[in-house]
Amino acid sequence: MNATATIRHETDEDQQDIWNVNQAAFNGVDEANLVYALRDGGFVEVSLVAECDQQIVGHILFSRVTINTNTGPVNALSLAPMAVAPEHQRQAIGTKLVEAGLDACRKLGHKIVVVLGHTEFYPRFGFSAELAQPLASPFGGGEAWMALELVPGALEGVIGSVKYSPPFGAFG
Ligand SMILES: CC(C)(COP(=O)(O)OP(=O)(O)OC[C@H]1O[C@@H](n2cnc3c(N)ncnc32)[C@H](O)[C@@H]1OP(=O)(O)O)[C@@H](O)C(=O)NCCC(=O)NCCS
Image (cartoon, rainbow, N blue to C red; front, top):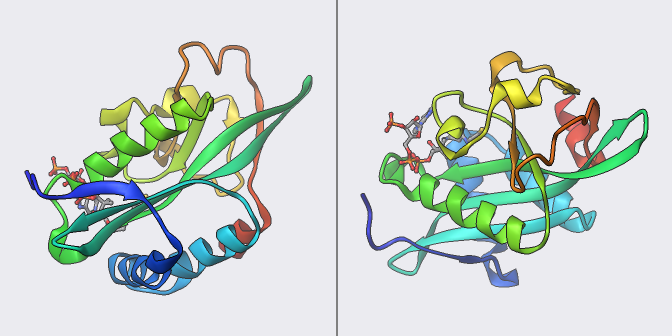
């Protein structure tokens, strides 16, 4: 457990550090560039950083998506990307980022979050592949495709396909 990591909203000055953390964690530039594209497109709802000794060592981003259903669109958020610098992983920094991120989303009035990610990591926060089953993912994902209700019952009766914002097109 790393007691010294503090979580806060990103500022303009953090952008390069956030790019660096994503590039290092994913060992490539795609997710790092996606963060810029989501910002530039105005799709970001919550973007938090984890700081240790005044150094940014982790980042999490939530952006708006739409669930298209037979009865109309339902607003939701996508958790992506999230990253902790390799030398800081497995010190509960990712856990702090997810918990603080979900709290921030709830406070903004959001009800549903989807994620395509590690099956051994996200379920501990309430993400569930079962909840995501009625939601078609443009990227597939199987058990890695998960959803979470920030408000209990928010996904009740919601059947449809999730439409991501254009910056995610690069991952299609
Ligand atoms: C996934 C990630 C954000 C977790 O951050 P973290 O600070 O290491 O996470 P925590 O210490 O809070 O929690 C540890 C859990 O994360 C998961 N985890 C950590 N590193 C992981 C890795 N390299 N691959 C898969 N899962 C990992 C494990 O489930 C681990 O649980 P355990 O310690 O009980 O085995 C971080 O490992 C990371 O940045 N990985 C590379 C980028 C990535 O995969 N991002 C997520 C895309 S969905």
